[in-house]
Image (cartoon, rainbow, N blue to C red; front, top):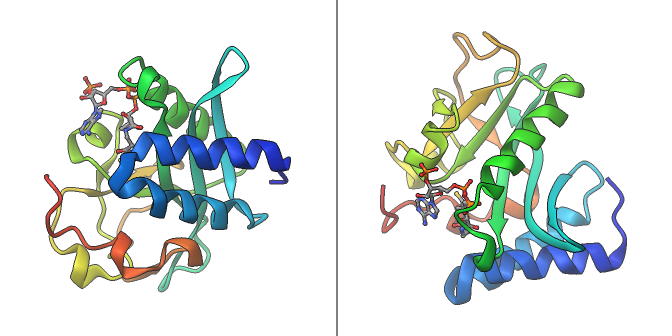
Length: 176
Ligand SMILES: CC(C)(COP(=O)(O)OP(=O)(O)OC[C@H]1O[C@@H](n2cnc3c(N)ncnc32)[C@H](O)[C@@H]1OP(=O)(O)O)[C@@H](O)C(=O)NCCC(=O)NCCS
C-alpha cells in the first residue's frame, strides 16, 4: 500500500499516543518501518477528519507451509480519547473483510487473550517467532479467514523485519 507522508505521520503519532509513554516510542518506530514496506496493509477508522484508530497487517510466513497466505496483526491502536467505543472491533472487522478479498488464509496475533478471544481468535498451533520467549501463552492466537485452512498446520514461523526484534515477543511480565 502506498501512503501519503502526512498520513504516515498521523498513523505513527496515533500509535505513539495509543500505546502510551512506555511502549509508545518503540511501537511508533515499528509502525514507521512497517509503513515503508509496500506489502503492509494499513486500515484506518476515522472520526471526522481524524484517524481515530489504525491497524497494520504484514505478511507472515509459515516455515513448513510456504503456500499459506498469512498475516500478522500488529500494531492495533486507538487514540486514548476514542478507546472503548468499538473502534478496535471495527478495525479488526475491516481488516478481515479486506484480507478475505485478497484470498488470505489466516491472521495471527500476540495480544490480550480475552480481547482477541471475544473477536473470534483461537489459540494458535503454529509456533510464533522467538517462541521460547513467547512461551506457553493464551496471548498467541489466530483467526482463520478461509475456514479449515489451518487444520493440522503447525511448525515455526517468521514475521516481517520490523517486528522480528525479540523484545516484541517476550511475554514475561505481560498480564494474561
Ligand atoms: C486495545 C485497543 C486497541 C482496543 O480498542 P478499543 O476501540 O478501545 O476497543 P473496543 O471498543 O473495540 O473494545 C473494548 C474492549 O477492549 C478491552 N480493552 C481495552 N484496553 C484493554 C487492555 N489494556 N487490556 C485488555 N482489554 C482491553 C475492553 O475491556 C473491552 O472489552 P470487551 O469488548 O470484551 O468489553 C485500544 O484500547 C488501544 O489502543 N489500547 C492501547 C494500545 C494497545 O494496547 N494495543 C494492543 C492491542 S493487543
